Image (cartoon, rainbow, N blue to C red):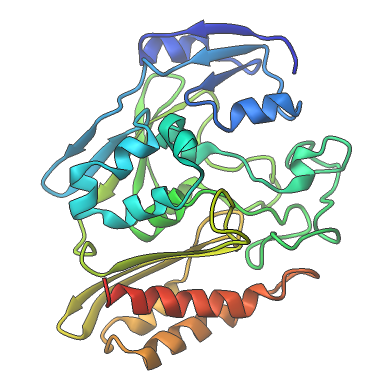
Length: 325
């Protein structure tokens, strides 16, 4: 690990004033410290922002605001989240270990880097680590890699479980930029596909900070599910995950939300499947058709063709679980 300076700030403005291209913010450090140990990230200075950002969960008439410094465990066990946004709690509790959830921050969860093995191996080409060097996974070991939204630049997937739920629930990311101006970014515009800049995971401006996540009020708290398929029961990232939420009137689907992890550089909304389901009966036949609509456009790589049927089954299971909550 490269030697570094460490400083701790007490407020947002002070944090932003100290940030430059040689420094990085640190909150829980559950991902950044690993990257530093592997020499993937080599900041000259770490700016500790644990006292500079809010850690509260605040409910308004039409949304809930979760402070960026709130710990994952605190959010997953919060009474408001459990009662009105249980999909968020379920996704959070599906990720990592209890010890990591106790340390990891909500804002940091959104900014964690891919777990693609080539990204962590500094002896191999990786456009995300070194732009222009190539993507080793594209024709290499890509079992965990993307099946949609990728290109030759990068086939990595985003590792967060929380982000899949936030995508399904159409959250917003509240930020403060380097000029100390507050802005809001729709969640589906926050995490990005690789395009020509695979080194950029998101649209957070340089030297800006996430201050809170805002989740709108939808009647999805009764019929929801989070399904995570992985190689072992605990401490593993998703091969495929599905966040599903239904608003039902009797057996009729009024609104549907479906998002997946383990399939793309960002959580992937299955909007055509959502549109198909709305107005239809909540039954196995329609759930199966929605899953078929989702998989028709995916293009697996050389070693992850198994994800096609796995995704279909996970979507069907998640939708069925929505009506048995």
